[in-house]
Image: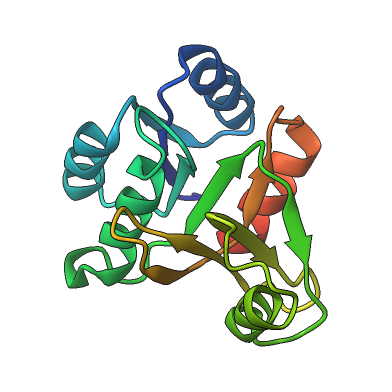
Length: 165
């Protein structure tokens, strides 16, 4: 008997939550939804999901980043993959070190004014968010990949299956 994989989705857009939930439930996943960072952390803590899918920007420009950072840096959530949903363009990198690519892009191309860079190497699966926080500090946040908005079922399911074994 196959164990149903649990996925927590966090997004402040009810329509997006509903669409992603429906797609994943139709594929047999157990889906738990949350509308913000606080509710998301509570559900992840309670449910111990196999995957978290989070919006990049929610009620604030930093809420999705803050939520992902908490998941990635808190030992309590260690090993839970994180996919980020976004309508922001994702840069494709050939460099295996996506953080190095982001920093080179900022420095060598004189793009230090950019608030957010989303970088992904499709071959290696290496991905991350290079963003300026509220203090103007540049933060690197490795994630397990990105899902483009508007969400397409095929792309969503490919990303989910890639990170959930």
